[in-house]
Image (cartoon, rainbow, N blue to C red; front, side, top):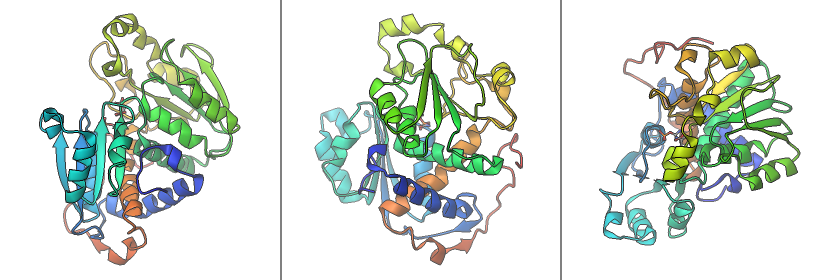
Amino acid sequence: MSSHLLSVDSLSREHVNHLMRVASRMEPIAQRRQVTRVLEGAVLGNLFFEASTRTRVSFHAAFCRLGGSVCDTTGFTFSSMAKGESLYDTSRVMSGYCDAIVMRHPDQGSVAEFAAATNVPVINGGDGPGEHPSQALLDFYTIDKEFTRLGKTLAGAHLLLTGDLKYGRTVHSLIKLLSLYDPMRITLVSPPGLEMPGYLIDLVESRGHRVEQRDSLNSDFSDLDVVYTTRIQKERFTEDMIESFAGVSQDFTVDRAFLDRHCTDTTIVMHPLPRDSRPGANDLSVDLNGDPRLAIFRQTDNGIPVRMAIFATLLQVDDLIEKDLREVRWFVPTRIGIDDRQL
Ligand code: ASP
Ligand code: CP
């Protein structure tokens, strides 16, 4: 693994397997049963120039749970980029203050440009419609964990990826990561105009996977193991696109009726979140709340051990974790969410 995490392109199957093993060793800390201080004294710079809840807060929390501290900047308005400072200068300045940097930025390639100006590890927290590699790692960790619980294997599994596959950066990173593994079946369903970029389909097919593309959820699907839904990325649309896609989203809604028709008791439903819950948004339906197949909050919880593993590996403390553990002393509820169940 290189000194930065900018794209899944820099990861081999061995790197991913290592990160998955380190992440599972982080579980007792992520689940608030044990405490470590391996990153005591280290400082993270968390630079978010686009909206975020999960990525920003879970990277922050993951660094704190390893014993480090975090400096945050949110939005252009409160950064000196608003005064015309370049990515190069910002990178060099931040590197003098911080031991690792996470950045989210609306322009594809911007995080790589920032990383090119520093030897401090940089993690891409999302660069426009480009990539979101830490999300792909936590998605993969979730699939692996859920499949282990359900007694399934990844080889030969059938995954459905649906929604905005053109601008959705999470699916760009996820499909590259899945392609490193043994052949599986991947069905892509998106509104016309929002299809997965062709070069990614070519890459996945060249590695032996079976890819099928459809433009509607109202067709026949069989043997689905994973339904991975995504939000229409309206913030990336031009004015005329907003008009032409108005109303389209309702045909791409995954809800209880879709699950009843196409899925089994062992299909899992994922979404990188946020889901747009405003009336008319037609994102992943809330009528699935409480259904054990809905894995979205197990998925968000998995963001902590996976992001801890990324930091521990990049900062080379992954071998020290077990030497530094203590029991927690504060109150932790046994069920975090009201709908959580023991599976
Ligand atoms: N939160 C994810 C991202 O930033 C997915 C989304 O926003 O729809 O890429
Ligand atoms: N999944 C994800 O990246 O969420 P945020 O946009 O809230 O960070």
